[in-house]
Amino acid sequence: MAGSAEARKLVYLVTGGCGFLGEHVVRMLLEREPRLRELRVFDLHLSPWLEELKTGPVQVTGIQGDVSEAHEVAAAVSGAHVVIHTAGLVDVFGRASPETIYKVNVQGTQNVVEACVQTGTRFLVYTSSMEVVGPNIKGHPFYRGNEDTPYEAVHEHPYPHSKAQAERLVLEANGRMVHGGLPLVTCALRPTGIYGEGHQIMRDFYHQGLRLGGRLFRAIPASVEHGRVYVGNVAWMHVLVARELEHRAALMGGQVYFCYDKSPYKSYEDFNMEFLGPCGLRLVGTRPLLPYWLLVLLATLNALLQWLLRPLLLYAPLLNPYTLVVANTTFTVSTNKAQRHFGYEPLFSWEDSRTRTILWMQGMDSSAQ
Ligand SMILES: NC(=O)c1ccc[n+]([C@@H]2O[C@H](COP(=O)([O-])OP(=O)(O)OC[C@H]3O[C@@H](n4cnc5c(N)ncnc54)[C@H](O)[C@@H]3O)[C@@H](O)[C@H]2O)c1
Ligand SMILES: CC(C)[C@@H](O)CC[C@@H](C)[C@H]1CC[C@H]2[C@@H]3[C@H](O)C=C4C[C@@H](O)CC[C@]4(C)[C@H]3CC[C@]12C
Image 1 (cartoon, rainbow, N blue to C red):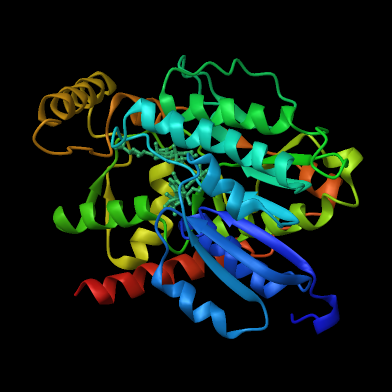
Image 2 (cartoon, rainbow, N blue to C red; image 1 turned 120 degrees about the vertical axis):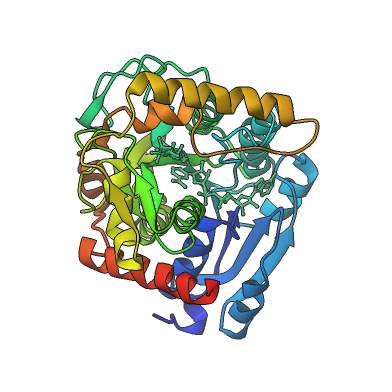
């Protein structure tokens, strides 16, 4: 939907704009934000597809930078009306050190907040995560909860802990005076497990299945529900929040919103099979093939191997003590806060989300042959 030239006056910055979610946010903004004059895409690694976006009426500016470097962030933020901060180290597999995770996710977010304050940017949307809430280290289920559901959010793992710290920084910054004397308006979006075109973990499961002769082996009971949300709907919620923050600052400022749509409640593995099945894979077993204690042992051995091999190579399998607990703990949301506060409705139905994801996987399938 193109806006008239005179209506194009806003400058948006998307950090992590070349990532899985970031790319969908960038493309959604170009399609559905008619007020855009300039779209800045800030990322540690700029993608080649950015070039194809530079042919339209909106100025698309790729900025290679590191959110943990305050001066790079300040330069990118300066002059922006809205910042959508998705950049982060999404690592629960032990690929990055805890120090690096905190440096990027916490210090990086602090840098974004301070840059908004120093340069006068008034609207900041942060991509938080369900993991700010749970599952907690005790494996307590969160069954179709909402933003107000009481839950003991206790984290030891660097990733959820860093996301919780970053979210707190963003929400506490709401109302701070920015350069120019007006208040900063912030909010945080908490996606559950995002799926869709470009999801690396789905790729990993697909390739693991190919290696195992087209089979995946059930490890988690089908009864363990895991919340999932389509990447296009998460991107749409980001665009909508960024648009509505100015007019609904009193209501939305300092708030958190779960990202949700009509994706069905299923176990993580059964949900993945909605896409892996049409690509020729099958999930062996109606119940977990191994007892849980054996899975714990295997996960622990994986963690030990990762530690032993680290000086030589990076060994980062999907199964480790943390991912096993998360996979094995029910965590689903049922809320309409985003609809009540800013009129959010999913842009993509479950059927459409599923079809788009399958087509992407099959396209990956054909390119893999
Ligand atoms: N994938 C999910 O299921 C999920 C669910 C909930 C929340 N989230 C959150 O959404 C955001 C995006 O996640 P994603 O799945 O798209 O991950 P991703 O790794 O695909 O994207 C993250 C992007 O941030 C960039 N980045 C990393 N470190 C950076 C740095 N120091 N400076 C600048 N850019 C940097 C990466 O290059 C990448 O392009 C993250 O904040 C994540 O915590 C993801
Ligand atoms: C090997 C089996 C036990 C297999 O079932 C493990 C699955 C496991 C790799 C995933 C299960 C749940 C996933 C997490 C969840 O979807 C939410 C997340 C929050 C987001 O901010 C980042 C990604 C993640 C932590 C996601 C990561 C993979 C799982 C742990």
